[in-house]
Length: 179
Ligand SMILES: O=P(O)(O)OC[C@H]1O[C@H](OP(=O)(O)OP(=O)(O)O)[C@H](O)[C@@H]1O
Ligand code: HPA
Ligand SMILES: [Mg+2]
Image (cartoon, rainbow, N blue to C red; front, side, top):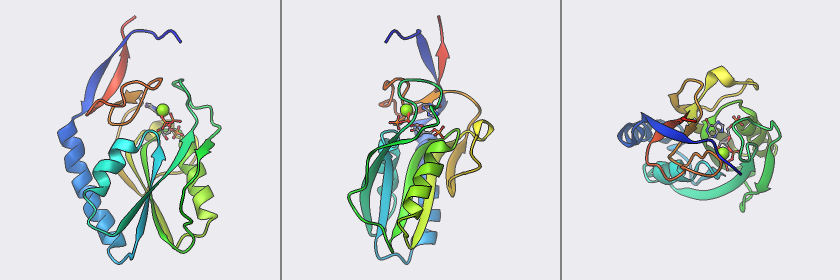
């Protein structure tokens, strides 16, 4: 695929992300402090960096599992069709579950996954997203906790990609086309 040239302008620094995750972890511990085992579900692939940092701030008994959902492919627009490419290993009926997402944009992905997991009858199901773009919402759905609200910019870094690139940037940046 030929790619238009672009640069990435920093929007949220690695330091700001780390500070926000520390604060979010305190709120999650208040909600789930009494859990005997919290199943922390990362939505692949975008949440892999966020979940790694978040679980290390949670001194709760946690189990980590992953579910792979995809709707963007290599495009900048959602296909609005959420495909489940990999399901959880564990059953979640009667268990405490925290879904970890990198970004809520149109809302299709998190709303679809939450519907799917709710049908499995967990005891408590909550969700957290590092980023939220409320102005782009097409489905009336949001995470229980959000790290940062951002404007309508296509962002990359800290796990998030553009056509599979830039996931390894330590900060969140916005894509700016140069040609
Ligand atoms: O709110 P939405 O408009 O549904 O967009 C958010 C979703 O889109 C991206 O995933 P993508 O489908 O690109 O897969 P990836 O996580 O593997 O990059 C992102 O990681 C979120 O999961
Ligand atoms: O801003 C974004 N960047 C990358 N992937 C995305 N998926 C939804 N929104 C975005
Ligand atoms: Mg993506």
